[in-house]
Image (cartoon, rainbow, N blue to C red; front, top):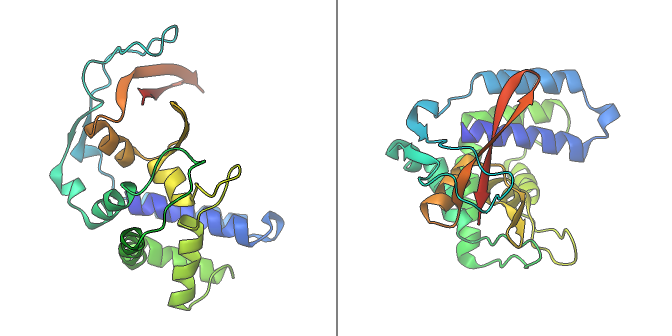
Length: 220
């Protein structure tokens, strides 16, 4: 599932940042993204969540969930090549986006390992072919790899310091103090909760188009 999610983000990012929206074939993009999502291999049956009580809206610091959100994540998930590569990368990041990203040899090795696995996946190979058909990527493997690196790992500044990146924003998250500004990946949440960095306090429920949507609340 995580590879296809990443591939969806890849398509959207490349098309948006390479072509003016008015020049992009949005119908073709939507059709391809829908077909890619439909072939998603989900991990739902391998993960058990324990939602517990609703979080306190009046006192959000109060912990209304005595147990972790994740009751079980099957070992087959964490031992997978992609998840292992992501976990190896996360240890190099800090939440504060105003702290410059340190580029070490070990970090570079972890990035290259992730890119090797990511590019070899069926989802990304399909995405690469589609991007070529749209004229926003090249058939040259080295150039495509550099394109991915620039999108995911090239540091950029939200304020004055180059402490953000596409990968960090999606998979690790960014915060100001104890306020999470960006966080979009369940596996990163699971690892942080397992390491006692995140403490799950419960959920909020809202009505969205007649459907109840659960939002997780955490405290760092």
